[in-house]
Length: 292
Image (cartoon, rainbow, N blue to C red; front, side):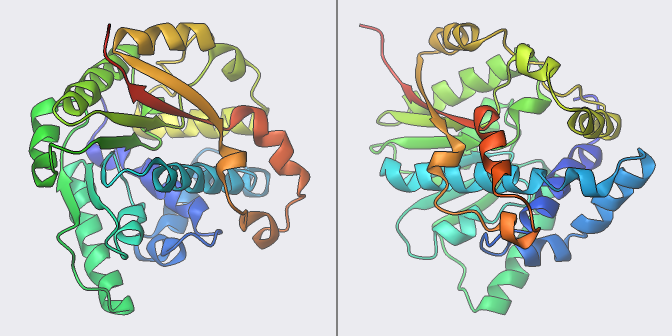
């Protein structure tokens, strides 16, 4: 990758910053512990952004997180592999009732910070460490690292793989490599699924409002990664791409899959913001299919 891992991981702090306004488990604590507000304030200050014009991002991050969690619950999956997990605490939350095994992966620097976070949160909330929740360093572009991360899983059961907020930072070639890796892993299990909330279409990117364009430019400046370099022409282009790797996709609405929104009231936003966001907030639930 072009940028240093420390620069890439800044984006994980931006996600954590916006999640803190929600009722997502552990989100507010995590944001404080990793200094997410300071990281976001630095981006705003250095790039001349207007903080108050960016609050609408909070329900976007809430919908993305909650819709994925809902899809995991509804899938019946008992084994989940998360790529580029960042500072999300979904794994800790979903393994508290021992209903599934959850492995999270990210770059080593993020993982080191996250393991410290988990120790602190377990101490605060009196949550015992669980063999069902594993956090390990692995690059989503390296299938051998990912394979090693899945060693704890039962190969006789299906595998669900997810990546929340990763695809937007990859090139088309890198997105293809991730797709190959995910499909390779799933083929080693009894089938499975892949969840992605951030495939992008070029026509929609061209029509973004100015404040979103400016924040995207700021993120690009920090990470040295062009956002949505992997963007597709349209839904047919994406379907063709996924088909080459043996995936059939169902496109769900993040809004419809989100049980409740807490950020709207927390930030005194107009409820109409949810309807305005609806067309852009999708999540792809992909099933690995065999040719025949």
